[in-house]
Length: 372
Image (cartoon, rainbow, N blue to C red; front, side, top):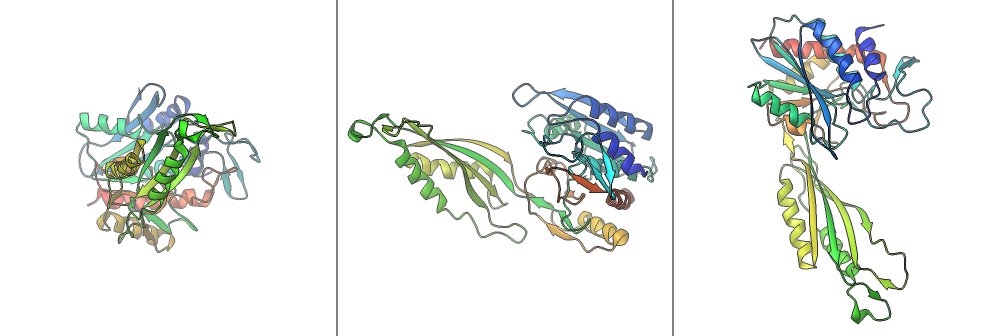
């Protein structure tokens, strides 16, 4: 069994539904310490978004600093798996288990790559959170605070999210759109439907808000980003009676936005529309957009992929958010990992060959970055 597959199995067999704590970090620490890493683990936060366990490991004291970032928490496996999601199995060349793709397999491949890199070639760090799949309030951002307190700043950071689509290496992410969720509330006055003049129907006002918001065109996209989009995701009145005008109506929307906007700007825009119709807005900005312009770092990654497996790589900003949205405030960040076809699905699985090929690519990337 290859080193990458061996490590992946050790991590998968640690149940770590978000937020991950304990066993999976024990396993990771036991793997990293013999490789010369100083490992710092800490728990932060309180309910409802915490507590969350995180790990920061670093090796080397001089030279360029190359960071790898990832997460060991996974989404709940759900029912209907062909085998136990936390008992890794290899069948027909595939390693099955929750987290095989997203993203314990990538972490394992990076660790396997470390076996080929001398510990005196530069500084390598690993930024590993237990809460990327959850609220991410006390995850990577907490590790970044620790790094700031200790004056630790990487030159570049590779995030091992599963970015490949059809085959390993066909896509890397050089940016991501931002994300904001909003809850629109309209209060009215409850009353009998036969006497509407004695009531105030909030549904009418809410639908007016929704109609106006739905007509907003935020932008037409940019050179690297698709157009920003507004999507309503919930509509709630909670009125069980057919003859009662309700006292309140609510809607929820989500906006994925490019670098023409900021989260607060969009909150202000939707709030202004809502206020005109008597509504109020609560919002949560999950992350701002970021872009690492094509250049030396993405060139290194593309070249390593081409030299290792002969694939031409597409640079993309598509998809959802990741912790790269935070890490981009530290240094240039690019995401590259396994095929994303089965992430979050039943019978999540990574090709064993891809784990080994990814390890070889990661080794080339790290060597190139550290030799600059």
